[in-house]
Image (cartoon, rainbow, N blue to C red; front, side, top):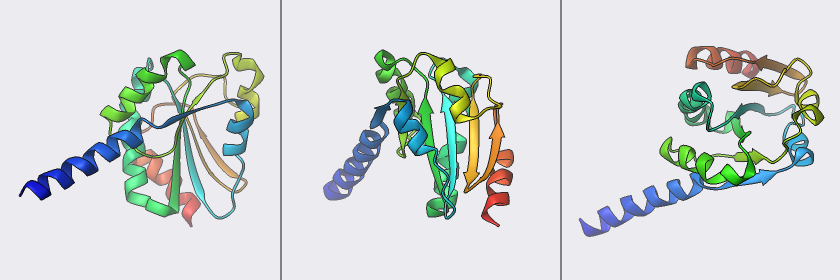
Length: 156
């Protein structure tokens, strides 16, 4: 019984540690992340800890990663200031998010928003579902059904 409790506690601790692994990146690394891939569906979500709709929709990205597994790669990109990294980490930990998460350390938004998506005015939450050159731009809070529909359209 002690071994079982230890193992369960160990794996829970490891998943929470992974949630805390948020890499700080700059524009150059962000644009590398966003490069089209013909063989993989990507879901990129831009969010911030101070954005209530952003935080509210985080569980659907976790659900996406769990449901689609290797078929879909989910990437979260926080727009919090770098000095607020711990705040973003705590939210991801609370939501038990343990997949690729980044914090974009670029405060001059006009220098990179158009490079990410020309239709984007900078409002969040913002999500891009992409496979190769096919790109779906969503600039509103998503439901699970909406996101699943967009992903399924690219998996065909």
